[in-house]
Image: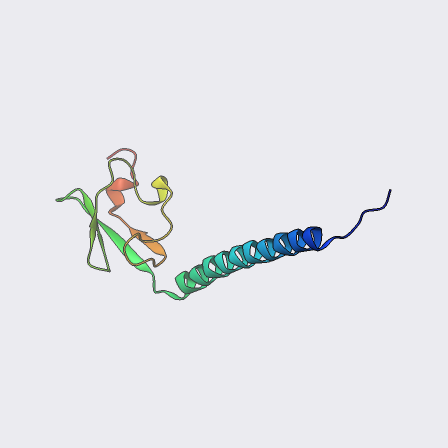
Length: 101
């Protein structure tokens, strides 16, 4: 038995194709935006984080302060500053790296 193409079935197929195209375009736009954000992050200047022992927090070159309950930014999986988005560079006193301190 052969499939018959009626105006209704052709119209339904056209609607499905249009919906697929819209969805595909939306996904493409979302991916492009994500890639653009990554490129912009790579172009941002590094944000240096310095540990302030007296405040028990990290001071950033983007003039913010961040407190971690345990460990350093890298130990907590932080690669980018959550404030300015720049690549995170950690600068800490030697005592943080000295297991005998």
